[in-house]
Length: 407
Image (cartoon, rainbow, N blue to C red; front, side):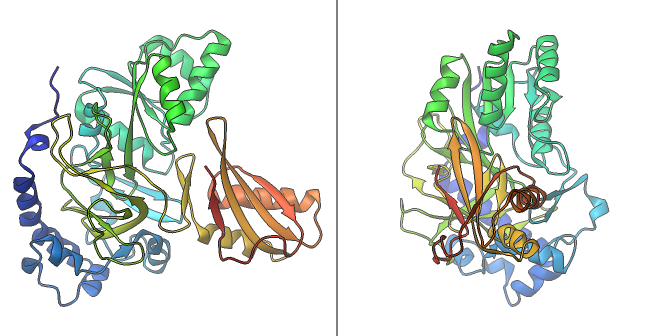
């Protein structure tokens, strides 16, 4: 079995670096054709940005800024030069943030991540990421089809119908959140359905702790993790070496001190900043708010690109619950809808192997009607269900935190 997707994965790191920065000036010019980038990068000579030091002098664009920017100049905040009609699909993510899908093959650059997880041409893949408005389902769908796989566009939920599809088509591979994979396996064991065809998985969108990794292995499934975003597609992925995540090709990944654009010392934890060279929709120094650290040396799998330790938390208070980002701005919106509430704090925990969120809200007068109303707002704003706990006025600490991740 071929170990690598293509020769790009094993080229000399210096050759890769030279290629990326030789292409960066063109990406900069394409970006600056859009009005918002033209304003942010005013005075920048694209031809002078040919190394990491020069790139680090360019301003960051924080992902947390995008909802307000997109609202002010819909749909893309002035960061995309091409008209919406020139793209293949048009999506939205919580915020809202609006994302276009390019027309090229494998527009989210995910095929090599699936390949690293053992997916091969001719495999049948059960894809359980959502296909509704958000890009997750299509990221993995397009990537699997670019690799030559057949895809069952299952989406999440409807386990009984999924069992019918699994028993009929016998998929060997799964893509989706690790939580939903466990739900499928547990439900199949309880109801006597046969899902034994699934032997490998690429999971993303939620925590994949060691306990759950070991459980998957005990059930005969080799599951690997991927790290990506709706803006950039696949950023990094696990390989059979299981030593960190390998950064995808065609991306320039920096790790900077949180709150700044300054690179960290080698091995230090910092915020992930990505520049993409996609000519249809380049991103220049998009700061994701996610923390990681670089790993030294070459991966035992033979891939030579930069490796990161994986997701190590958030540089801001935005967190990911069941594959969806929840942002401080959304908690503030719930407060606006319920002015009778005082301070709010969303606490994210795990129950078994599932993400759980509880909104703690100060209220002078607590009652079931208020609790139900706030719960409805929580679902409407975040697109996720959660618990609501009403507490007395002054109970929550005055420390500026509105989201606490206790997982």
